[in-house]
Every structure is written in C-alpha cells, then in structure tokens.
Image (cartoon, rainbow, N blue to C red):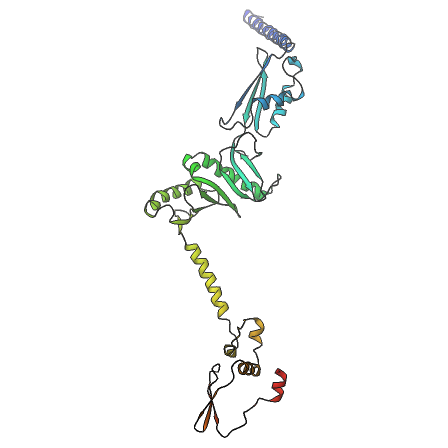
Length: 356
C-alpha cells in the first residue's frame, strides 16, 4: 500500500469518527432537553389582521384541552397530536408547533381567509374561504366580505352543481375584495338558476346582470366605463337594469320600460277577454253576458230572448193611419203590422211552454 492510499483511508476514518461523535452528542443533547420541562407557550397567528376569528385564548384552550402544558416534561408532549387538534377548528388553516432552545413551545397558526358570506334560500348563512371551505359565523365579529344571496342548499354534502357554484362565488368574491371601488359599490350579489349572478349596487336603485363568473375583468370594465360615460349625461337613476354579460356591449333598460311592458301584456289579455265571440242576440239583453265555453258552444234560444225583452220593456205602439208601428226601445228593428189585424201573432205554444 502506497503512502497516498494510506493517507486517504486515514482521512475517511477521521470523518467517520467525527460523524459518529456528532450523532452521539446530538442524541445526548436531545435526551437532556427532553428531560427538561416546558417553560412557556408563545402563539403567533398569521392571516388577515382585520378579522381574527380565532385568538390566542382559543388556541391556548385547544392546546391545553387535555391538560396543562407548562411545567410538563417535553418528552411527554405529543406535538403532532396537538397540531391535529388545532386544525380541527374550522378557522385554522394550518398549525405548526416546536420547542426552542429556551424550552418555550412555539405555536404558529395560519387563519383561514373568508372571501364571501353566503345566504341560503332556507335562511341559513355561512362564510366561504379562499379554498371553498364553509366556515361558521362568529360571535366575535362579522367579516366585511361580499354577500351572496339565494344559494340553493343548506346541505353540507354538496352535489356537483352546488360545488361548482361555490367555486364561482369564491372567484367573484376574490375579485371584488381585490378592487376597492367594486368592494365599496357592490351591496350584494343575487344568485339565479344556472349559476348566473346579478349585482345590487350601493349607489343607485338599478340591477346589473353579470351572468356567469367568467371574464369578470372585462365585464366590470364595461360597467365602469358605462358608469363614467352614460350616467354623466342621464343621471344615476335613469336606468333600472343593466346587462354586461355580452361581449363588448352593455344593454341598458330605461326606468319604467319594464312596467310599460307588463301593462301592455295585461291590457292585451283584457282585450282578448272582451273580444270573445258570443251569440249576437246577447246584446239585446240588459243583463251582463259572461263569456264562457258553454255560452259560445250553446247559444241562448231565440224564444227565451224575445220573452225576456218583452218582460223587461213592453212594446209601445203608435197608430199611424192604417198601420201600427212597434217601437220597442230594446229592439233594433221596427215591425210594421196591418191596422185591421186585431190579434197579435203569438209564438208556437210548444216553444212557449218549454221556456215558461
């Protein structure tokens, strides 16, 4: 064996001994540390500063739910189990714990970020975070986030359409939160069937149809341009409905136009009812005629109609030379009868008995 090979082996042996010594020392240090007791707990919560749906007291209660941690031997603390217990809280997104060299338990909490508050048609309410997870309401405070009304279900287990709808709500909520102007202008977003949305603004009494949650930047840019141009000329209360879901256009409906259309439909229906074909002789009767299926298919008999007329208004005759003229005011025709005819014409008895 030459001198160079022997030197290399000596260096390798030294490094192996150094490694073994380091491991031994680290093990001894860890054993010494584990025999020590936890001196204190420090909690740090990150996330949204203005919300804080979970505070240090809540975290401390969760940590010490199974016993006091301060003064406990470090080796007996199951940090992994404690992290899992913290993450059962719906407002805790992530929890990490470790003990530093001063025997202080460091607790790092990442709070969930609500991006929308949802109201269901059954009357329920909950928050949604950025990952689409449902979060319960808090007794401590209310988050200033976009509101969505008309969500179709209170069920925790969601169907596929409801799950897709929640993703759309998260997308719109995040967009509004990122823009201070729209966050101040949007009072609520109404949910319509087919994952369609309509915006109710804070200023103005109009409704803006947004459509689906796609191309939000283009839609709100069109709406912003319309606000700046059209309303400077017409005023903020000139339109009652806007639609920005179509590409490169804004459809505006003037105030009162929808009511006029409704009035026109009602008037057309009334005219159709008034123009239902009935028996022509019905106009000779003073009593009202109700248009129905029976009155159209079965006209009132002529004999009955004539009898009714005579009972309502008897004939008045005027003698004019050799003729007698019948001037019944309810009759549309004038009947001329010979003067020497003393006996008035009567209807067939069979018909009169049948109707009497």
